[in-house]
Image 1 (cartoon, rainbow, N blue to C red):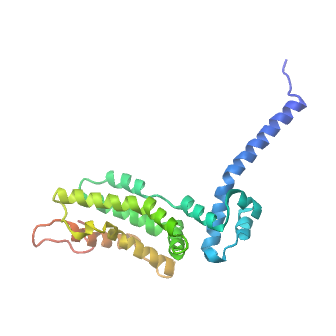
Image 2 (image 1 turned 45 degrees about the vertical axis):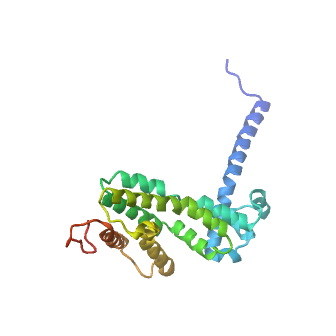
Image 3 (image 1 turned 90 degrees about the horizontal axis):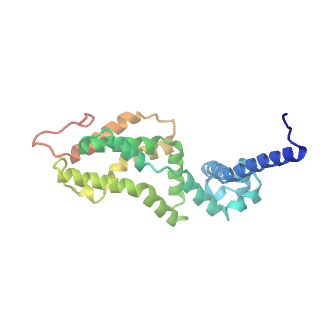
Length: 233
């Protein structure tokens, strides 16, 4: 004969469910606060952003923010760390799957990075905030570069060195500063920050021409032969 839970058992079960919901909400709350902080920092800048406004946007009290973060500086640092996208792993996997030579790897790797760096709105705003607040957060800038740009620069240098060893590309001073290969994406990023949608840009064409120009300067070619910018290698 079926038995029905007692009132006490139902209360215990309901209490357990409510507790699980509270635990999940508590775990999600820091992320919600950081999302709200991102919107406030983007709209108002660091100096004009108030934690009261962050709390209101997140739907919590100002006191709740202090449960997780000591001050506005810590909120900003945590926001940058949480929302920054490490792209080197995805770029590596994408390029390795479609490349059989140094030129093909560099083309795939750079085009992937260019798309991410120039077309991700959130990444673009993080970039702008870091530039604006570089003097206020020098250690955060160093950390961000080490974790996000450092692996990209090291991989580019390794690819250039490997290509030079195989005779596929010329040995050149680019090995000193492989980050120069990222300049087209950063330039486009800045243009998009300045002009937004007021100056439409054919980004794919921009990337194609930029990569061709770079590869034409790097590839080892027979005398008298060189591609024109805009032509694929």
